Amino acid sequence: MDVLHFFVGVFGNATALFFFLAPTITFKRIIWSKSTEQFSGIPYVMTLLNCLISAWYGLPFVSKNNLLVSTISGTGAVIETIFVLIFIIYAPRKEKYKILGLLTLVLTIFATVAFVSLYALHDNTRKLFCGYATTIFSIIMYSSPLSIIVPSGLGCGLGLIQLILYFIYRNKKDKDADTNQPTSESVEVGTGKPQQEKQMVAYGSVDERV
Image (cartoon, rainbow, N blue to C red; front, side):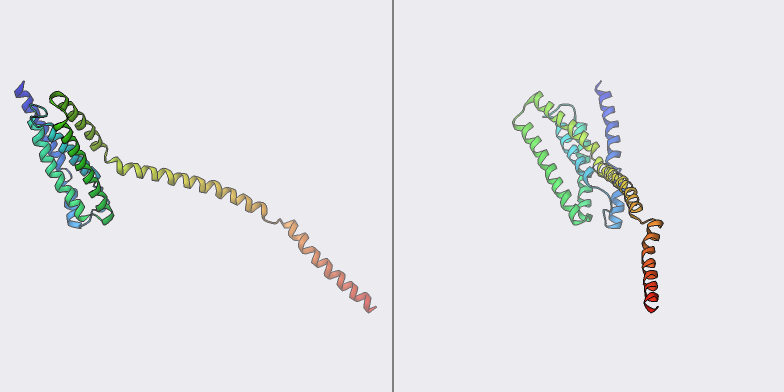
C-alpha cells in the first residue's frame, strides 16, 4: 500500500510540475517583448498562495506521510514566485501596484494560516484546518482566470443593452421626425396665402389707377 501511495504521488508530482511550468511560454514572450501585454498576473499570485499552503499542509508536523505534497508544492511556489516577479518587473505601473497589493494579501493570508495552525491548533485539528484551507484556496486558484472572463462578459452584456436601447430610441426618434414634418398640402396652403395677397395688392393698385 505504501509503495502504491508512493508511485501515485510521484505521478501526481510529475503532472503538477508540467502544470506549474505551462506558463513558461507566456513569460518568455513577456521577457522578449518587455511587456505583459494583455496577460493577467492574478492566476499566478493565487497559484503561489495555493502552493504555499499545500506545502505547509504536507509538512510532517501538520500531516504525516505527505512529504511528496510538500516537495511538489514547494517547487511550485518557487516557480510561481519567479513568474510573479517577472510579471511585476514588466507590468505597467497600475497593474504592478495591483499585483504587489495582491501579493501582500496572499503572503498575509499564508502567514495567518501558518501562525494559527502552529500555535492555536494541534494534532488532527491542525491537519483539518490546513486541509480545508488548502481545498478552499485550490478552488480559488482554479477559478482565478474568471477574473478576466467575468468583466469581459459583463462588458458584452452592457454593450448589447446599449445597442438595443439605441435601436429602440432611434426608431422612436424617426417616427417623431416624420410626425413633425409638414405635409405637401400644408406647404401648398402656406404658400398659397402670400400669392393671394400679392394678387389682391395688384388688383387694388389697378383700381386706384382707374
